[in-house]
Image 1: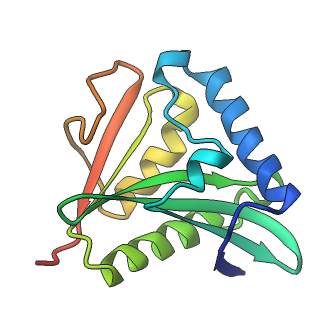
Image 2 (image 1 turned 180 degrees about the vertical axis):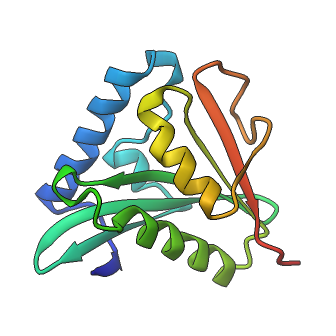
Length: 154
C-alpha cells in the first residue's frame, strides 16, 4: 500500500468523496453532516492523501490545520472493496505521523454517534483518541462524537 499526497483530480478519488458524502447524508441528519466535498478539501490549510495498491484506490484521509498547533482529521474513508484490509489503520497512523512532523500538539476529529460509526470510534480509541467537548466551530450535537489525541509536542 502506498499513501501519497493527492490533488483530488482523479475520477476515482472524486467518486470516493461523493460516495462518502452520500453515505454521511444517509446515516445522519443534514445539519449533522460535517464531511467535506472535493472543493472544500482543496482549500488552503487542508492536506489530502490517498492510499493505493497496484493502481486501485483503497481510501483517503485529510488533515485540516487549525491555529495554535491543532489539526483536525477530515475525510477518513476506506473504499468498500478495501474494507478489512487495514487501510483505515494505515491512513490514521499516517495522519498521526504527519501531524507530529508538523509540530501539531493536538489532533481532533468529529464522527457520528450512530451504530454505523462504531467501527470508526473503536479505531480512533485504539489509537489513543478520547472523547472531548466540541472544538473549533463545532457545537454540541446529539449525532456527533468529538475525539482528540494529545500528541505530546510542545
